Length: 255
Image (tube, rainbow, N blue to C red):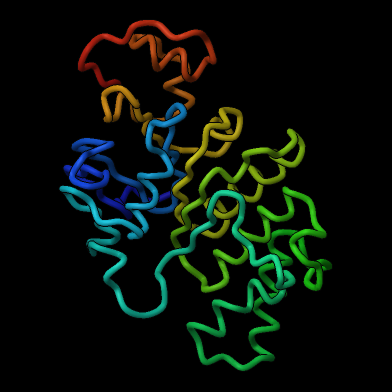
């Protein structure tokens, strides 16, 4: 894993109609790492990801991906992949067609080449035999893996995942964790992961930020396994150890 910053976020405030939900955020995502955006319900995890991928424009500050800002303003093939919460597969298309669609939209590849690339991505996520299946015909965990395969189809080296383990049984969740580790450790892909599934976070994430709904900011940052051991800030200890909340010293940020 490189120590270089793939994503740099500086002075970022995000929200709508001029009212900020999150204020003055500063953090870096290292190249080849798995970076987790954490927080309780309503803390703004998925909202922050929407701004990072350029679906919304920030109130203030900047998001630089390899030194380039405003991803939504870029013309051409997307430079990163996104797995939205729930997978967002097209229900009327089988898995092959779901994966082939971005290739047909963004490339001039032949159908034979598209077939080869789609099959390779389905094989990568252990869905090779299911190319002809509709999303409704496969399990929730398989849908998540299919959505990751589609996010990877244009060969990005940056991937955003929104709640990939949500709603999965423990065994399926572990299998998905193994896939995410393979993406970073074997393929060198940088992952930005939005999640509230603590076992998955501790298993796959190298670095994280913890968002706080009340303050609208970051109250902790660093290796989640190290943060779990620390207890200087009660809210941080409570989050990583799943204990009842205690009062947080005003203005403190750990990490």
